[in-house]
Image 1 (cartoon, rainbow, N blue to C red):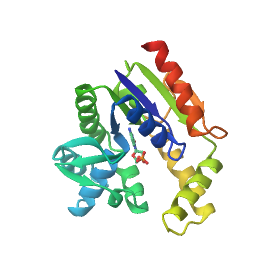
Image 2: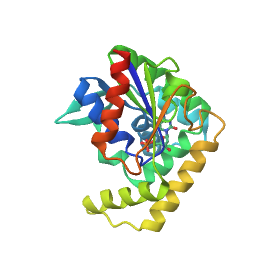
Image 3: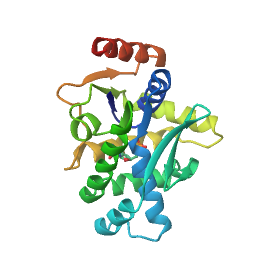
Length: 219
Ligand code: DC
């Protein structure tokens, strides 16, 4: 069983994917975390992020696993857990850069397929329903207005004690969306047979209930 959850940053995709995986006892493959890990490891190794070959080589050297630890989904990169270090703004920007390299995507998509096939899985990303698992049992595209997403992000950051400027966060979201939607390879879009859910005015429970209903039709 493969559930594909795609959509832009800040639409609530991660929360929905995590809750769904937790309730169903599925593995959660956070593919964004894989692009982040590649960006993080490449920068740490002093690799030029604009060099596709060099970054792809870093991606090839990494082996990923996912596991829930105390309710949190943890990514293991060559056996080592990665946490907040891959969530900072610099890594977000760098992940967007490395994810635009076709060769890097080829390497990671292969790993995503391998990891996803191991057990019943929820895969969360941008191109799961369109590229990684076009035959997924269910494809959901989670979206929300950019202003709503920026507001949620600001609240999340201030909860974590980080200072956040709404306008700057909004600008970054709009810019990242533009890059993710316009890129030539695996652009962010709704799969032809995907179901779109706009979370601008929906709570997490309502979104989960909608997906559970869709899943029941497949069981
Ligand atoms: O979901 P996220 O913010 O953790 O993703 C980090 C970056 O990786 C973001 O720029 C989009 C990109 N990404 C991608 O291109 N394809 C995926 N399947 C997942 C993420």
